[in-house]
Length: 610
Image (cartoon, rainbow, N blue to C red):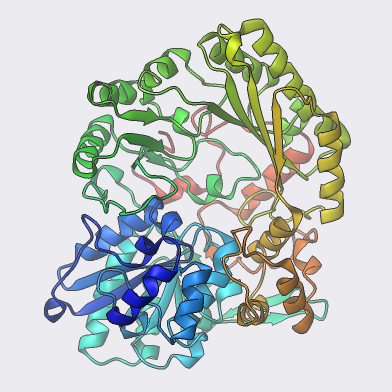
């Protein structure tokens, strides 16, 4: 295999994607390894190597003395063509051994549009696609990640799902598999026992039946499986694993820097945001631990940039103290400290001036909606005054570029709300004209609009997604009224977000659609070069499934495919928040007042507060 691979590499783009050998990669003696894990990221190397979750679990698994976890990424189209031409099976980077030789095949999934890559990677690995066709302990396939809170579209292909944060549950899975392998269990025995681990969902242990209208009639547990499966969380982040000796990529990746995770969860309750609800409760790391982790990671990797990672970094209570501690280390060494995920309502000019001493970058904010009524409906808790004051502060401090993110198609949105985006952008432009201290550089405002996708475990999980035709009409309406001068307006294409909505709220009947699309060429759907909507439409038609069934409005009484999963936030709370959205009523953040969502029961050690 290695000789063949060496002959193929000169014929493909970015061959460093496929060879491994990076600094800090983990290589073990096979004779001392009892369990081998092929850890798969269903996208390209440069995307997967930028994923902090994958780096964490790679370290967690390899910390087990007799476990060897190796990385596997989806090949680019040119490499896939060579692999199929030469019957070269998908391999792991560290050993170059075929994935089909591994005990466990694990996927971390963060985006619905990578579902096709999961099937395509199994196909390239020459591993049977269907879980029912894999009969023994070898090649057990499991999946976890931010996207797996509705696992049903992948139920035919994945043996079990690990729900929530995996640092603890992954070790428990490996311990059980080690025992099963030593004692020569059957696959059924292993699945029965693994289903008893908190946070593990075995889809074959649940029978789904449907009404004549296509809606779910019942979800019936079998084999003693629990009625609902509760997600796992890490309770003490200060003592959780963090990869200070991280793999240094041998080629450029998307986020080529050190990522420092300051806390998990979010005190906000934006009603469209799945992560804001599924990552609850809020759990911080201490300034002392973060500072030490940052120094160790930067010294080991040689990176010249570090970014503070969370859902809302400016909500970290001790942000100023942390930034000061990091700047004391970073500034003399010309290391850039980046603060993403800023909010317009708690922007600190003093802090940003300190941070930008090494390198001044643009500012990014996400007002999400153009009018106050709609921002209140989605519980954004940001006012127009907040946005304009923040921009004025930035312009007075020497900034001249701002990126703004909005959504089109939010529940209750009207044309007035759409035009409100253009009006807000015009006011920001006027603010620059009034407040800028360096007008020679000009003003650059980048505006991007996304097509709203209703997601499970949000107050909008029951909402319809507007049609692609209506989305396009609203996008054109906005474009016609957008101030042309100094504004760069970009928007998401409708077809990709439409398919994302179908997969996000899909049931296990979509497995047939996924398989048909992949076997007819679907892959790398997150990349414009490869996404082909026609393949998916053909697959829906061939399988007799109407995609509009999954983008319709749902009754609050309807049984949902993901009702087997418990993320800690109650359905009653989500329904209450949905009613508040239609009344454009604000719900306070968790730091101001506990709203009784239920997530606090997952974390009895302390309040949901960072």
